[in-house]
Length: 292
Image (cartoon, rainbow, N blue to C red; front, side, top):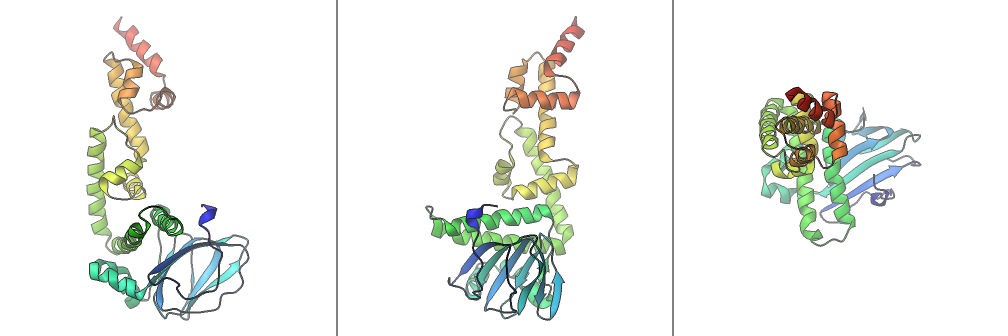
């Protein structure tokens, strides 16, 4: 985690901004936090620590990857058991007025809030891949908030809206797993088709994420779930098959690995030998001997 993104913790429980605020805290020495409430929504993303949380009169254990939404006027506080492990979390505040502004754009933004308000289930559990996707969006928002790059004022609300919709989607698909499975199967099939057609191009997760308008963490998760191997492993295997066939067809080793997406010979050599148990040169020579 970038240390320059960290904020020193303070006990202020009111917003300075009229719309939203976001912080990254990492504490090794934190005194008791009194129970409190506020008039805005608080999203809390737990990274690390030995704590529980009190919401209303109930106390909940929390674990890394948990996300909490505390609606306005709900009393809550962290209960710190030990600070031997640093207490690390993101805290995101958003005003009621800004949330109403989002609801005018789409009722889909209300899904998470309505669920929490009606069920009083304040904690959303996520796996590591899902939380990595959330963390990437949170860090982008923090970097934009603390920075002064061109277009900041235009980009900030887009980052906020993207983060909130992402959280709504997580809950929606947790509660409707069948719909997620159908969408993930479709994404998986389309990814395989795209990869087959672009094996000689850049197929990094970043490129695929832009092409399919989903996070790279989601792509990695979908591929692993459907095929049992990483997308990188799959692409490498596909490229190696094409290289092997090209060498059998009298293409030079250099031309083969450059044509089918390997950036340099050393990475191609390691992958080829790991897959086939023989070096590319020995494979070529064995083929030549076989022809004689």
